[in-house]
Image (cartoon, rainbow, N blue to C red; front, side, top):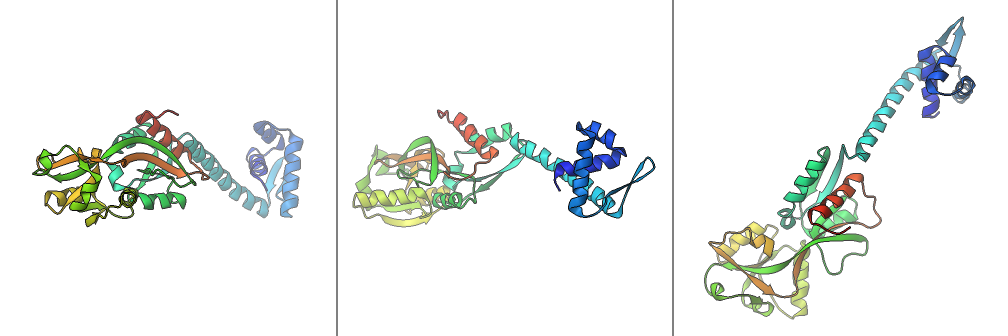
Length: 295
């Protein structure tokens, strides 16, 4: 039994005529008669009886008719929902955004919501390595994260912006008289850094190893505002991307360029062989437009 046959049968019952049903469905009357005979053969039961000029449903026919009306209603609803999804009138976007990246996402999220108010955003907020794994496991459609120089070959990446790293310190000497900090100098100070599940933390660890630097890690945290508070409390110095430093209290803190090749490169990742929904493709296009990325 298929939807078309079911639709023909329901229409015959409603019209009480094979001829009128055929006209309504834009097919020939023999076509409808043949399809209903095939349906009866498939079900092994008579569905309609003629009583004079009337068509009377058998018990089986009534069950098929009542269920058929409900099925056709659900099928129409499904078609409408699929049309809404394809036209981006509704849907869900599962997006990963690490806490450090979240501060950069208000603009594109606002623009996406303006263009597609019917799309629900489900945002997962944890470290870059975790969001990457969630994308690989298809738990997330896409993720915004700090890109690495050697991305996973199973991931597609799209870079949006690149920012220098800074050393965040208390607004006092010896930092006020400095114009920058060399990488090798970091060994002399307690460091406040991100947790290991942040991709930037892994990049810093690799950088230290390449330059044979043994950092004195004092505190690890997943919150940049907490790290800034620890700096202000003279617990140590932190290494943070410049855009984050720009949001901090200039009256109590100072940030200096870190002289190193390490940069905070913000971008998007998604599975290379994974299915991208219409809502996910629209998010990529929205971010490209927001950051003026060439197609």
